[in-house]
Length: 299
Length: 254
Image (cartoon, rainbow over all chains, first blue to last red; front, side):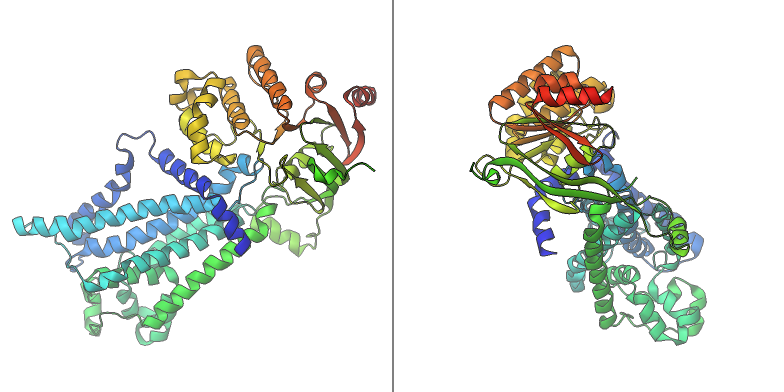
């Protein structure tokens, strides 16, 4: 594995060019260009604040902030994994003719998606830490409220890194498996559209904690949180936002008198989820390397 | 005894064998049924069987043979796209050490049609092993050789095939390769550009560059090659001078 990492390092200029190409191609012929990385999250904040919040009866103060903390990490994860599943086929003409460490291709897709992910957070922070507090001071009748600056935001870069590791691992798996089974792309598409509702994206994880099966079984909730995707989303919310009560998302939960624990996930569970991510990354890289020579030997 | 050929050869191939276990790309269902039916055992197909030859620096070697004789597999092994099943491939620069190897790609492979010619030169050049400095220095020469002028600032989807071929060829030869690997497309474009390609190849040959090319076009082989390797069903049928091998190959092809 060390030798393969060294080889990857030797090809860093190609990797850089490949990332640049991905980014150029994505918005090549659009008028707004790179702004398209920023416009969708910005628009979704407005729509969530003025439409979705009222329709769902969500009482939480900064629903759009809670939602974006779920949507931004989820979009990075799902888009990168789906894009990479096709990446080797798209570049088949190249890998069949020229030597390059083949993992360069999925890794470049992950990095280009990572750039969009970071831009999404830039929008998030400038809106909730700068723009909205100013708007609120000028005219409190607008429903746009900022979020406070918290010391625990220092965790943010580590959570970003944890997600990058997770996404890279998943992407290497999906890129390699898709070379042998065409179902992979469809399985991922179906799975992703379903788990969107199962994962704490539209609501906070505490809602899951207090509803249904997990109500009396904290261990089951911890098991759910060992899944790195809900763990990473919950970690983002825990680091960036004030703790919210589950009944602010779902009024029926008020009857259960949920305790106002601010961090409902034990640190050991976060650590476990991180170790699982690291394992996915390591095994994905090992699996990719074990079969990368067979990618072109098919008919 | 002559000196050891390994010392100076550009390409040193020894007892090279390549078997393919053809993995049909399919669905998970098919894979499952195959396994269930006990038909997971895939017959290996031997594309190359115990090939040994060496090419000295500066030589131009043509590989001929019928379809399925192993020509493209050999090229893939030299380009390190495949891993040998057994045997070895050693490529070396004239002074020893790792050589710069440039494969000529098929039309379109490696290009992105939404990007301009210049943007494509950046990626394609990096793909063939050029670094940022070399790319900056050579971009002008690449554009000039490919006769593209202003067109190079427009996206590739508006280009004709000839222009794309010229660009690909131009980038590949401007990587200043020690070893050039060519599958079929040795000279591209219209007749005038083809002549230019031949002049450039003659120049490469004069500069002691090694060229290995696969071709069905015997007229091109006769014109450019200094030696011919004839492959037949994965083994070397004949390896020798142009006149000798061509005569035998033509006689066998009738």
